[in-house]
Length: 121
Image 1 (cartoon, rainbow, N blue to C red):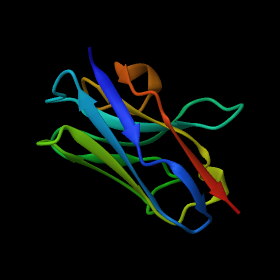
Image 2: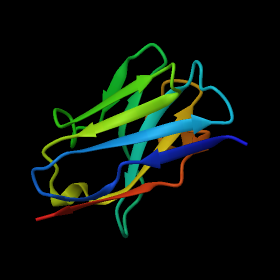
Image 3: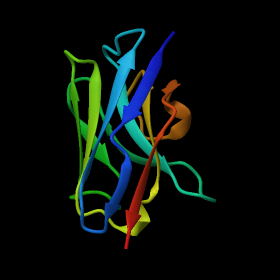
């Protein structure tokens, strides 16, 4: 049973920070690209950031310079450090795994259940 389990979401004031974690269980994601996506109410799921196995990173324009993705191979865990949060960042954040470098939803094979991030103005 493959599982991706997100944690670290919550309520934060505008300008604050949160760090999301995604722990993989059931298999190793050796060679996989790990990504973060988010979905706000009434909107489609959108790409936030991704990191390849060798460490190449990609980020959506809206979060570039504020969010940083990283991964710990030994712990099979990926992180999303989110700084200078604003109310537009409010969404459910999902962790996902893809077998190659990818930024589109349909390219990802495994998904977590999501963690809620709410930014109060």
